Length: 112
Image (cartoon, rainbow, N blue to C red; front, side):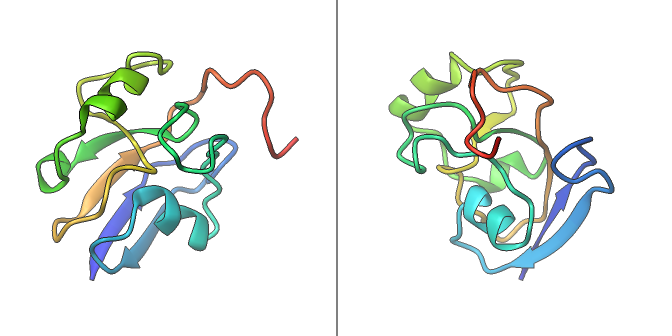
């Protein structure tokens, strides 16, 4: 099992969270299945950036982002070199420390 350590986010998980998942699941699916509601306005089809996360530790254990994901990331708010779309990043064997950015470019939240 791989640990996903989510840093505190004032709305999504104020206390932070640590979950254990099987490798091969997307970060977005793992989070949502464990009560961490990462938004995914495009239904995880790599057509938006609402599921943008920053991998603070363990980035090298993830597969490379493809060209479509890289193009979408260029539109993400607060883009960093360690940014990934959580719907596309599949968990590997190494533990991850994940930061959910404070904002997305989504003008209307699906949950509000």
